[in-house]
Image (cartoon, rainbow, N blue to C red; front, side, top):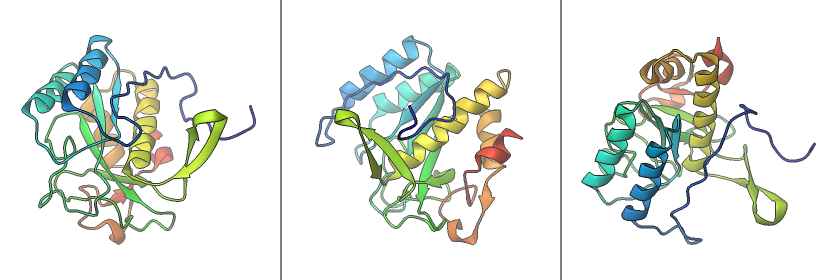
Length: 204
């Protein structure tokens, strides 16, 4: 409509599944219901723009089941400025095949000061500050910040890659993202790839 924003995969089908209230609170049982519903409907990608400090074996098993089904899982690292090694956040701290954990950068390609990080369990950085415009209620748009926004960028690139390379494995698509980042010393020790997402290079 000439206003606002457009996604990178225009023909994608979205399945919004809500379990958090307006204050950001939700239960693990409701999260599990959403994940299990997504698995049942055979989605391609689950975007986890949420997390918490409580470990749940049931949550781990549900996401593992999604992974075994070939579903890609993009997960936000969280916004507490913590190392995930000393302050785990779930599901980001789970080691699950087909999960890619996203930390955030600002508009100068610095690691965002609010973003959680890990050179072991966080995989890649993506823009999360001053570049992330989102739709709001009442037909409005707003500039938001957080690893939730960064994770949505990665989900979009995963969707584009899956459309571009339909026969590639989930592991292969994630590897393609990690091998095509823009490397920067600013992300040293912040994520496995030590780089920021580069959509164009991932598609080459």
